[in-house]
Length: 273
Image: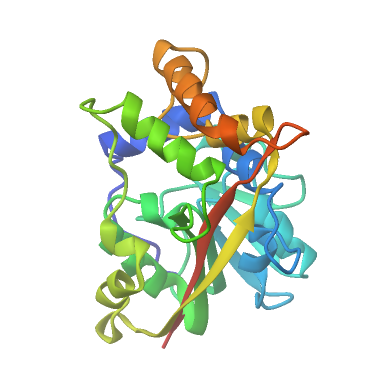
């Protein structure tokens, strides 16, 4: 059995992410589980589509296990891996959980039949090490599928996500902000640079979807505020962003106090050769 020999040394950015999730575990699923795609599925169900029943499936950066639960519902055997102990403590009972970094996976070579990652791949440091670890642990012809965020739609008219991005830009102008991840992890062109034939990968594809998260303005704010740009709990910055957001989104409220919200998602996949 050969396990990763990569040294587990978390960066300052990883420590920031770990601390954020220690204060607010489950934030990603609280934000995204209420949303539905045009066919009525959640983003987690879309991610789990195609996972082989009965096979071991790595849920990378699993958080509180929402994707693992979707995989389990398909008959797969998910293994929830995350670097946050607080998140793993929220994983549903009966799902295997392991605290580890994507850059140093504690699995034997060619031992994983399928792998997924929901809204976290674009946040990783040392992305080349993460790609190398996937190349090592995935079985031949296994798939890695990741859900990537694409931001608010550029052509759908005013909606709450765009108002939130504008509010952040206005309030935080000139202030330092944590820049997470590697730009290559977020686009098809970047994946072609990372998941090369030399690394043992082929058949990259990107599918676009739009998640609908309409709701009462208070609920929409709570979903959007589960963001790395805003620390959990009250703060002057959080209050200022909320005030700016509510001012910008007010014209979009209907008679019930609901606002539209759209989130572009990309379902990216690549196959181990």
